[in-house]
Image 1 (cartoon, rainbow, N blue to C red):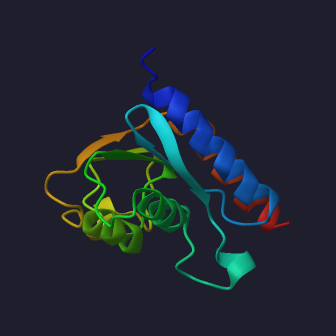
Image 2: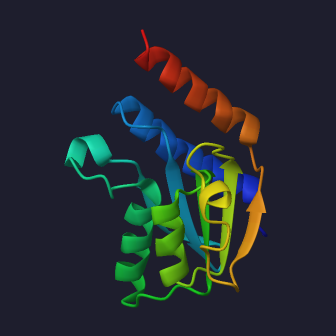
Amino acid sequence: MQLDDQYFMRIALQEAQKAYDLGEVPVGAVIVANQQIIAKGHNLTERLCDVTAHAEIQAITAAANYFGAKYLPECSLYVTLEPCVMCAGAIAWAQMGSLIFGSRDAKRGYQQLAPRALHPKTIVRTGIMAEEISAMMKSFFRNKRR
């Protein structure tokens, strides 16, 4: 059975919900190799007091540990929100095969700030479950402002 982008993005959305429940900005990430999830992550910047503890970084570190290698060209990263420049740099250094993200980040997304940050061979797909992801982000920030 061939699993699709929506399937893996739903798992990333479950990771984002974990971050939401912890009071973290709700971003979740999943790394897939050969149709199998090998790593997951969600934002932990508040909990770890670490500005680099983004979902993508957590997942990339777990995937590198899984393979015992720093390059991940056969992997796909599913992330709920467009990566920031820092995460795009990590994705580039890992030579990730593909990046699939749900909702754009017009303020801090790499496409706005550093559109050439990714490795040139990385394939990018966007807009997967964007409405659900955007609704979660809006809910989170609306609740933070109360």
